[in-house]
Image (cartoon, rainbow, N blue to C red; front, side, top):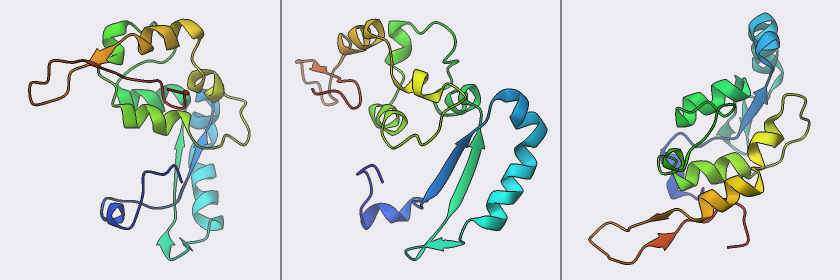
Length: 140
């Protein structure tokens, strides 16, 4: 629960879900069996809401969500394409166990933070003052 959701937001596929990340080899070899185990073992509902699960690789997850290879070089123009809410979603929430490098992707380097922090966007409606975008989870 990242603070995005309220009673109104339940109209767009909101539900508790488990995100499980496997390395690429394990995904290929065991992803189907792990998915079946989660379908069998997770409760069907939690606090009245249906429960879901997703199994990903780190690279596949970010390719699917942001159309970017997180193991490649990110340029300033790449950051302009990322919805701030998506960045907050990626960097918030607990990571309970990490053997696939998810935390390294979630915690960008100081250089990346500086680059991202220097990018500004102009609000719709013709406002002439740029508004800085802060890195998700930062003190800004």
